[in-house]
Amino acid sequence: MKKSLIYLCFLLGAGPVAAQQGVLTVQEYKQRVLDYSQQIKQSAEQRNALQQAIRIAKSSQLPQLDFSGSVQYRINDYDLDMMGAKLSMAHETYSLEAGVTQSVYQGGMIRNSIKAAEIQHEIAQKAEELTVENVLYAADVNYWATTAKKDLYLVVSEYVRIIEQLEGVVKERFNDGLISKTDMLQVQSRLKDAELQKSEASKAYQIALQNLNVLMGSDPMAPIDVVDSISIHTEAPTLMSLDEALVRRPDFHIADLGVSYQDRQISLARSKFNPNLAVGLKESWGTTMLNFDGSTMFNTNAFASLNVPIFHGGGRRKNVAYQQALLRSKEYDRQITRDQISQELSNAWTNLTENTRQIGVAEEACTIAVENLELNTFSYNEGKLPIIDVLTAQVTWIQAYSGLIQTWLQQKISLADYLKATSTLQ
Image 1 (tube, one colour):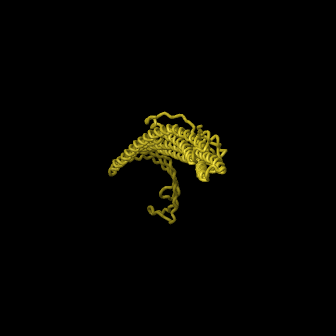
Image 2 (cartoon, rainbow, N blue to C red):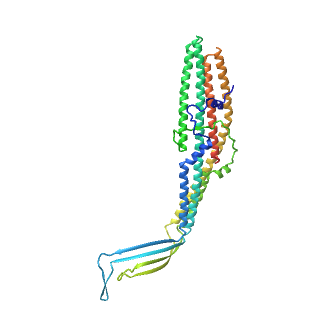
Image 3 (cartoon, rainbow, N blue to C red):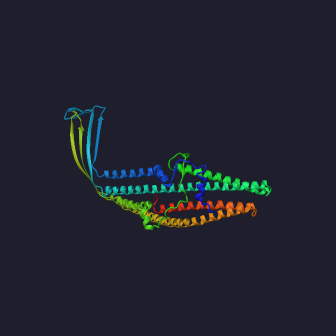
């Protein structure tokens, strides 16, 4: 009779290492990881910083108002002889000045700086999306890896129980003088080995639960249990084309925006060598330069500043050539990213297809292993087979179920890989 993994989990319950509180489904766990993730919060702050960078760049378009003041006190006395009359200068001079400056034209530097800051902000937005995807992927893989360790613990526990049942039969037959002590020693040796396996499985499961807690910001030792079975069937995704995937992938958008940003840097390099014009108005108040009587006055100045670069030793050409070389590098980087995405997409689809197909093979292997164990155990009880055949059937049983768990885990990971390759993780 076939015993499925789900039946074993129902038979054994949560087991002594599985907590009975803090139960989480995979969706609940992923949401808690998203809420806690420090990487996402850090990425969001970087995006906010670049939003401020746009405002800083735009502020260069606005008039600039400055205020300054100065005061001087001369320690030594100073008299000025003017046509035979001696005039004593005051020791102190002071002034206040307010000025407004408006940039009229800076060779396109302001406009290009704003566009460059906007592109950087878009890159930060896509980087935040990429961070969310990476966190979701890590949460998904960790959850299913923990579920696999839980199920493996349950299977090993059942394996121990099967050997204990056999040990009871062997002890009874040995006490009746029907078999030699060799059979009993073989079973006892196998039981101790199984108990060691159970201990290792328990340790691996507990550590996985602790890692699960840490990823969502909880105390590592907090009670928690994963309730979604690794053998749960999910709707199979459809094969997505490369062009569809590229539209969705944040990392490809980042590479594409990197090209746009570098192209803007070329325009910035040129704008530094264009004419620039600024106008302004200054109002000052204070004592005169030669302060004899302490009187003050206002002074208003309007000005215009024009700078036309003529010759800078080929600086414009060299700066533009430098930025153009970086642009070509960014274009190569975009193509490399495209090729990587193409590889990830095809590999993930192949792994998902094959791992899903292997589940049926692994389940059939479990069915055969169960039937083989039952027949060998029955034949041994009837005295028709040696104990070694039963022990071998038990090993085949544990290997078949361990293989089934591993196959399900590989299928879940390959599904996560494909969803990540298509940017459809949720």
